Length: 416
Length: 214
Image (cartoon, rainbow over all chains, first blue to last red):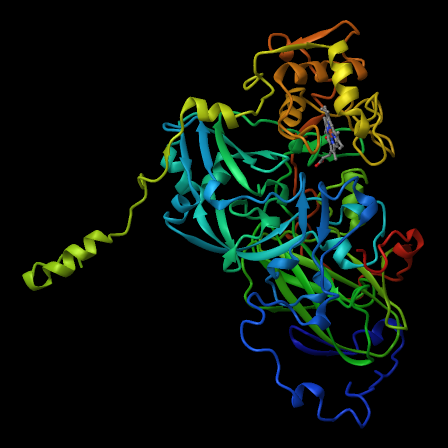
C-alpha cells in the first residue's frame, strides 16, 4: 500500500497498521486485445449543431441524477432530493444536479410579475422589479450551500449507504446578483433596525430572521447561478445568499424583506432548525455551518474497481472561512496523511481534495478530517454525541467512515 | 479622466459623465410601496403580537374548520396521519429517546403558529384562510394541547396572553462546542490508536433506496 499525500509518496504507512503485504500491482485498466476497432460513431455523421439547443449530458451518464429517500417525508412537495456528489468532480455543482428542498413545491414565477418588497423599519418602503435589481452594482461570488439537516439521519448511527444520501444536501455555485446591503440602502434602514425577515414568494412563504450585521456584511440577492438564470428549483428568479450559514435561510423565490427591531421566531427557527439537546433544552439561531468533509470516492456508490493505483477524492468546506487542511486515514484513524487540496481554495466554498494511493485489496477504513483557517477541527461523531446527544437532527458535521471491503464494495460504518 | 481640460477631449468627457459609475447610496431604482400594497404581502406575526390582524375565533368553531381543512393530514386530534406532522401532545418527551415536538410540547411562541398557518396552511391551499378562521383553528390547537378550555376563545386582544410551556427551553448557539486547535493542539497523525473495530453498519438497518424510482 502506497499513499501519495500532499508531500509526495508516503510509502508503507498502511503496512505499519497491518503487517506489510506488498501492494498488488495489477497494472493498467485497458481491456484485452480486440477493443481497438473502428466504432460506429467513427463511421457516421452525428447530429448537427442546435440539435440540442440546451445541451444535456451523454446518455451514458444518466445514472448521475438527484435522488430522494421516499420514507423520509409525507409528500414530494415538501421534501428533499440529494446531489450525486459521488459522481461529480471539482468544486462547482452543475445546475441541474443541485439538491432540492422545497416546502410547497417548485414555484414557477413569471419574471415580468416578479416583485421584491422592502418594508418595516426603513425610511422609504420600496418595490423593485427584476430589471431594477439587474441595474444595481453587481457581485459575483462562489459559495457552498449546505442544508442544516445534511447527515441528520446519521445521528444515531450509520444509516444510509451512499454519500449522496449522507452528505448530498450540499452544492457549490457561482452566484451573480447584488449585495443585499445595496438593496437595503435604497430603502434606508432606521437606527432601530436590527433584524431582517426574509420571506419566500412560493406556496410555503418560508420566512427567516437574520441579524442586520449579517445582512449588511456579505448576503446577496442572486439572480444567476453558474452563469445562467437561477433554476426554478433554486428560487428563480431571485434567491437570498447567506454565505456560510444554513441553507434554510437562503430564501428562494424571495418576495419580501422586512426590517425589524427583534427576531420573529418563526416556525422555521423554532419548531424546526433548533437543536434539541439531551436534557430537553434546545439551541436556537444555530446559523453557521461548521467545518466538514467527506470522501466521495471511494464511497458506497463509487466502489473501488481496481487494485493498484487509485485516486481518493473528496470535498471539504467550512462556514467559518477557508479550508486549511484535510487529513485522510485508510486504517480507521491510526495513521493520517495530509490530502492534496486542489485549487482554488475559496472561503465558504467547497474545496476538492485528493490522495493518490495504491490498493492491495485488503479492507480499508477511510475517513477524512477537515481543519479550517480558524483552527476548527472536524469532530468525530462520538465527540458530537458526547456534547449534543442524538436528538438534535441538525448540524451533524462528524467524521464519516467508509469501510472498503476486499471486494472493493464500500459500506457506511462507524468504528470504535 | 474627469480632470481633462483639453477642448478636443470635451466630447469624450461628457460621454464619460453620461456613463459615470453610480456611487453608493440612492440609485433611483424601485418605487415606493404604498400601505395598501404592503398590507397584501406583510402577513408575518411576531411573539409580541406585532402583525396580528383583527379577529377572533372559538375552540368549537376551530374544531369544525380543522376537521374540514386540516384533519385529513394532521388527524382529528392533531395526532398526525402517516408521516404528516403531529400537532398536539408530546409533553414531557423532549429529554427522551423519542421526542415529540408540537406546539404544546416544543414551540416557544404561539405567534409562530399564526405566522406559519397564515403563510403555508392548509398545505396545497395556502393563504386561503380568513383571520377569524386562523384564530379559531389555533384556539382548537391550544385546546388539543390542554392549553385552553373547551369554551375558550382566541382573539387579537388576548393572543399574547397565551404563553407556551417550552418558552424558556431555548438558548443561544454555543458553538464551537468541540475543541479547536487553539484548545487541544494539532491532531495526532501517527499511531493514534491501538485497535479499531466496526461498531455500526448501515447495511444492518437497510433503509437505503435501491434501484431507480419513476
